[in-house]
Image 1 (tube, rainbow, N blue to C red):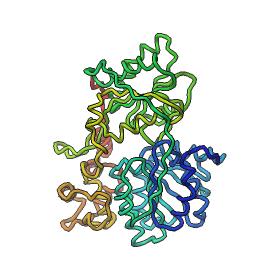
Image 2: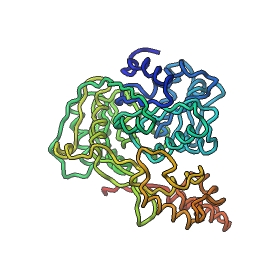
Image 3: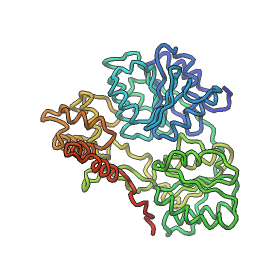
Image 4: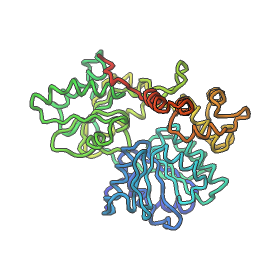
Length: 458
């Protein structure tokens, strides 16, 4: 392996800390190289006979990209020493020592094998995103180590999260910090077009950036609807002979299209992305970032009883990470489509999903684990009691839990399905009524975030 990443400087200290401690916290900014350098470095100190290094990535495209790059560094095909497991796809073998997985995969694996027999270490990457599944997986790993696997190693890696509370949760774990290397990024706050919809505002900023700058352009927009609207607004530029390629990048996009967005191409590239591109993904060639200052956040909707995505102002930490994307390869430029006052008034960090989301899936997973009360586990942020009680009542109404909070046979069937509990119960009931296909169709429609692929700004 080459020594061209900022994270390399602290790898000796990290190895020592991992050998001497059950848990370690690693803090390093985006671009330091932690996602791909750290797992490979730890292979030297964790014998193959102790099991695999399982690394949690919050997104499919990041999981696959990380596995492929590590395999490339070893001069191998993915699936040998380094592999991955994501929903509907897996490339591993008997020789695999590093397995990159997505959040749901890890949670279900722990449920199926509480002792994690074939796992030597679990690495939580991008833990600062604080997804519900990541918090759950960490709580389950800590519980498994306490009762079943005292030798299980845990490494939590974060770009922006405050390290002290996390280190305390992990038993006063040592904190290793890498400062990374970010080139200077010039901030620009264009005054024009502030009253336009986000997609139109972003399209105008792209047109300006094409004239004023060089290099590929990464545009942050809140969701798929805005991305499609912006792509449509930019289409005339491409048709007028501009040598540009427009690539959307968001979670619901077919995987092949996501890959095209991050791979190098012959033309100047404009990547229109959600917050999927904030951290672990590296998009080569980006020198310009355009930030709408908006993001989608998962939040419980009492009207439907389900989580839904709402559009909110991004956090200050998120805005800084987006800006840093322009300075990973050299000096860059960041166009912020909001005022300096708005930036200063942003909340420091996005709230953890566990504090604002529907907890019915979490409560069901924990009931399957044998936990009836959240206080039985260790949390960075404990689930709020009102939300916990509401989720428990719902699960009892659905027949997933009995009166004491223990999981029922029906609840076990629901927990095996990768659906929200309401939709899992719908599917099981459809099967009972001999109309399973209708149940599948309804569950798919209700799970879809954007059924009609509608332009919200039309």
